[in-house]
Length: 414
Ligand SMILES: *Cc1c(COP(=O)(O)O)cnc(C)c1O
Image (cartoon, rainbow, N blue to C red; front, top):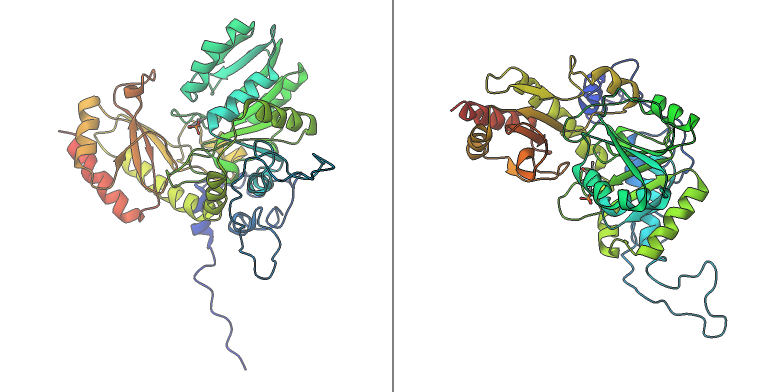
């Protein structure tokens, strides 16, 4: 008689699961979203996130070939000297590169749509804005979202006859008449407010508008905007998606073949493609996304609790924390809460003391990487309190990180 199999250490318990998602086992949390339009080897929503990211976009096994084929470094390809350019045969690197196609397959499986990759998040966001908007249109942007999107819109859209309106992510949202594009960012960056994508998408569609969601902060494992009714999921892959603070990347996903073709043509004309090595590196990094996010979320839960009880901290926002204004909304539409926590210390001097005392926290803008980092947003001109810090939890051991943050907070008191 064989002994029963011992429970594998890797089997997640209910408690592990809720620490890893930050959703606290809330029954209304969206744990398994509907099947995406694109399913590949790793794309089945029936499988767990770890399985899906490891297999996403990875070709079927061929004896003697690597798991993830090496990057294709190319500008022109050989043409058939007689037939010339042929459909389905790669001709020129700005449009045709199988390294991009594999990464697009991978991200498309995770987002549940067709993916077009770009050189950076801003290349992707500007593609959506400029390819969809015409003179006479209005666009709504988050007043509390990524500031370069607003800066770009203010500098380049009014001169094209496009009206730019801004709204706080938490609302209230007015009627959407005349609005061609509603761009949401949820959770917003750096305030971490959450809005109801399904409700806003339905309202914007009713008046003929398109809806895009900046999915940078949650990543497609945290939230699937296309399942919630958005026309575009657009993101920077520079942050948690690739997670190693060593590259820039962006992408646009959509289920509408015409919109996908429009974005792909836009990219071919404007040329904002990633380098093949970056595309390959991004694909390689995707395989650990589930593991990285799970640790980042668990760290954020612990750090948010610590912050909430510390006298140096005036306020803390983390949508996974019960009592946070975004807690209920996050539980309804997110699959897990990201590892970014925003908190406020007394002033700049307190943040200076906090950073000087920490041994683990890097001062850096950007977020979602392996290393815990902190960014005082007012130093970039954000309209935020002087002591507001966007804190990105890395994948360090939770106990080490909490001990370090406690020490730094004590020092911040002065
Ligand atoms: C960083 C970021 C961007 C811009 O991405 P880049 O890759 O730096 O161009 C856009 N939106 C959000 C929410 C971001 O955090």
